[in-house]
Length: 563
Image (cartoon, rainbow, N blue to C red):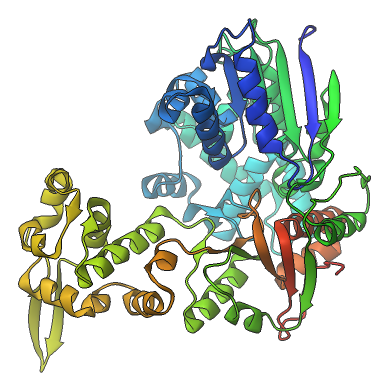
């Protein structure tokens, strides 16, 4: 560590942090000590999405396949590094499947399930279900991430959180969980990092530092740590261990102390800023935010109770505007789906309200963090639309079409059941097993050959296929209005502020509403109030040219955005 060069880059919104990291990796590849070996450079982010994007851009710059870099290199989350170095098998890890939820529920003697919640909790995995058991598991994850005793977390929650279980009951439940893991040789994601950095966690007595497990990756000359402000103490310890390898010469830490959104999960910029840096630079200019937008973002930060300092970041050269609106429904109804627009809200409940209004007015959109299946529905309906109009569908479009189409339906008429077959028996499996390799393009006259029954072919030709697909009629109506190009790739995206972090758009609409729980939490806690100010800063600075802060006149609780 004595010869390690630590370089810290502090970058505000739109200052080019990703470009800096990829440029650093490109230059590092040409250094003599790296010798052109892409596997000698490590990149660790705290989300798989950020890691995937960085791996893709680095692979393209280095003229190699992204899959090769991900499989053999060190473009990995810290958890993934620990997983590999500890030699853990897939069956050991509790990853949130239904079977895992059943196992945890049995272990802790209550029904719980693991989910990714990007509502008020920012896209991080939490447990829901039985309130006592779920709270205990979530407190246990937080205690281990912060490397503090479980009792400390449980007692603080009991004092400030309504209906929080008492500390002794939390510890009892977690002891059951840990005993079951030992008996069945199971581990969770936080366990992996704890073992890698050398922390032994006991629910009753707290953490103890022990010898770390697993070797530090060999041959890595330098590490780049992305979004370093979001590190918890445990994640920071993992990063600090990664740079202790014999070959490691440098580390780049890149982040923004004012974009910490996960303090509730143990994240703190003090870890990012706590490294003894050989050199520190503040990225001087935003290439995203026009002057009025950047200035509004700074006003959000100036409301922090502590820690604000002016980084002197210059705005982008282009013009921009900030508009305050008293009726968000009108703003959504006026949207044009061929214009790049990001519509964001504080919670998933409010995102659902946005989606409902866009559906009502027939404006196509895509969710920022939509599951792959939602995107596949658009591909499938695009294929059906093409076939309806006598055009060929691609093999991928037909693959998604048969996935969203029912094989058969049963309708009750006059008390009797009538079955109508849409796809021949085995058509889906035959197509997926190799049938799609026969067709680069699938024409309407090919439908019979791939298992579409006469009933389905008639439905497709007439356009009434939309009756068979969830949301098909709405999609078809919007396609007639906006055109297939817009429907297959809507330029309007909607999501929570947390899910949109790292994204940008020419036009941004922020629905200012917040839930009562968010407001009450901010009123009770200075730390949570500061977190809300940082969330508002992130929300505002997604915009490049036009920002609309839109209010719902029916809701009293709003963000404190100082327009």
